[in-house]
Length: 230
Image (cartoon, rainbow, N blue to C red):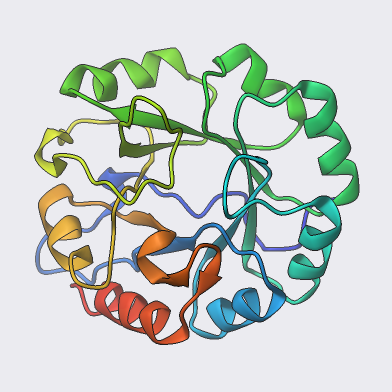
């Protein structure tokens, strides 16, 4: 069963942002690569909207289903749990979903829409951005995605590189909800949001003291910087 969170996605459409003169909606925050229950608990206390669990053995932030269950158990209601997979088999994904209460699946590899839509969960699709065409074509390539997650391109890595991409490539006319990721830190998040007009952001390495170990002070500073944007 999914984790009880009162909603199926922390991503909202850019067109939902009120015009000038109206109160701004809260920008959604996901902290990915959580590996310890105490980090999940602290993230929730700091008012994040979602956490990400990485089920990809090659990642330094990888967790097992047993670890993941303990992390989810540390969360209060209304924090979404996102499971990240990279080119995993359908059988393994289904087994993980049977063991761990997951709200949303994030596919970060070479999966297509037909594969991603089969798991009875809303899904996010990560797009590694090299050019504006990667962004433009993603909407038609993944029509069933709940949201797209735009990350930096790396020829040998599927994410978690700490690299950013050119935020000015993001156009104003995307109709599908999307999330900004890639090299975000407490120091650059305000500029990233102001440049891209993102309404949802995803951070991992930018709030760590070591691979997979979140830094409470960095998380707090990052979240404060986001919440200060109007």
